[in-house]
Image (cartoon, rainbow, N blue to C red; front, top):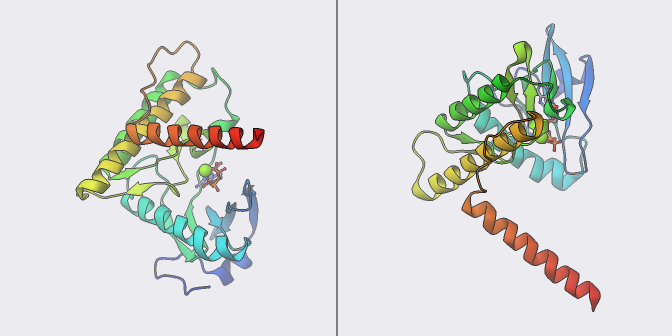
Length: 225
Ligand SMILES: Nc1ncnc2c1ncn2[C@@H]1O[C@H](COP(=O)(O)OP(=O)(O)OP(=O)(O)O)[C@@H](O)[C@H]1O
Ligand SMILES: [Mg+2]
């Protein structure tokens, strides 16, 4: 494992001796575990790939964490983005722990309309900082203190900063559109009676969907033969 960068508040050695509780076991072999660790009396969320197989631990995981770290750094000071507390090593990051639950635990009607309005505003701030989440689903939106929305899991994000080149800028705008569509779908699903329209998927996402459908069709035909 690589040397911890300067900004780490935690080293792997220190982490090993601290009290912790598992938040998320990793849904499959490609996913990290997420634990809440007590560091100097405050809870810190640690997302860690170190227990995974070599290709995930050494390639996929660090690549995803690089994206997350870059996004969190650009989001420093944005309300609703947990503070980035540093890279433990290539396999793990430490982020401010947000007490509360994610929206997977929320039932339709549990949240007021203002929550979804604040989520839209949070996306505006995110995009203004040059970060698009890219795969916003209900486990990535947290219901934090005071009923405020928080966003986590920037592993699929694009973080272009204030002045992206044209190609990146195009991709960024597509992903911003996908974020807004995801937020509108969450509103539709969890706020009964909401009449807010869900925007159509951005062009690139539509092409991706068509490609997936085409591959499914080819697979179905080849199975029949
Ligand atoms: N900073 C945090 N504070 C509180 N809870 C968190 C934090 N970071 C992550 N979590 C919780 O851990 C879960 C998994 O984290 P994350 O989404 O980053 O991992 P993941 O591997 O992408 O998981 P998934 O594929 O299920 O989305 C989140 O859905 C959330 O409930
Ligand atoms: Mg996630």
